[in-house]
Image (cartoon, rainbow, N blue to C red; front, top):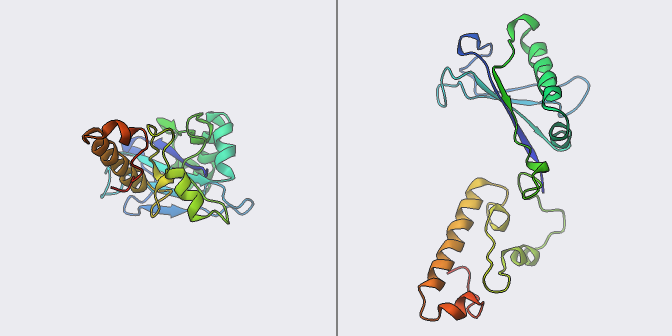
Length: 186
């Protein structure tokens, strides 16, 4: 699993300090690579104008650090970066601050699948296989084309949903549900 952490902040709409006509802006720490490098404005005209919402993104290994430390520590670090970028007096405290901790969620243990070098197509097919005939797996990790992406999860959910519906509607439904009909791409 890979971890990709989005940190959501909302600032008062009358105290937006960044250029809202720009969707993304970058920060390059002079000391540490990957230290809060990417920001996205949702106050952009194409998203939620005047919302005051700003997203900071970190990836591994910083995702693990950010997700394991107190929220207050993360907020202080992000605010320090923003104040370095925009000036100490220009950046107010956010009125809301949150981040999902996908890497710490017992049922997730990460944000997206990330195949290691040498992972084979056969191993990927094994992830798509059924267990005991009645347990199907679907999600971005089972997508051949879009693993790691939301639309991969959607496509795979639809694929498995169609297969379950086909089995339930089949005159041989019991056999299909018990794995006698192994076609899952139907």
